[in-house]
Image 1 (cartoon, rainbow, N blue to C red):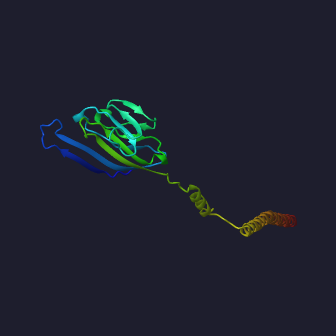
Image 2 (cartoon, one colour):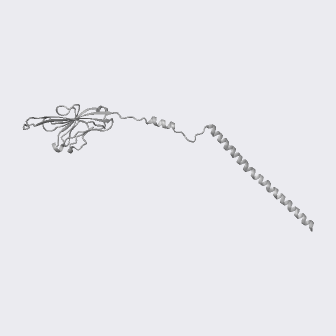
Length: 217
């Protein structure tokens, strides 16, 4: 929300201060408030309640007329709201401190335009006026779907293999398994043959020894 304030006061001082109306003064203030559709915005307006006490005031649309408020939206006697065109218009500030800022709930594009705050100060031409220009912008739509799609296309599985690579890997694995199985099956046959050879050799040796013993007797 951005506010740019300009203050202009036009006061006409009577030459004779002993007259009934020694000072004729009217103050006006203009500003701009920018908001977004669907959000709440607050249009500032305050007055010196310690000096003047509780005062009647109103908010309206369009230029502030010579008296009252044009297309009145809300009004207060300084202590409570006395008139309201819609519940979307709220005075959420401290009325007992002179804060009569207007809050518009859930603003729409049609809420754009001029608004006026008028505080009725006793005496002719003493009313305090706040003219505010409201600009309502549409919310910015984010392209989350496009961003998600781009991210999905860039992400890849780190361990990615083609069909040919997987076939080669499978063949190599099968060859290795066959070699291991052949080696495992060949080892028991070789060991058995060696064992049989040693047993036969031992039997021959024992037979020779027995024959030598018999002859020597």
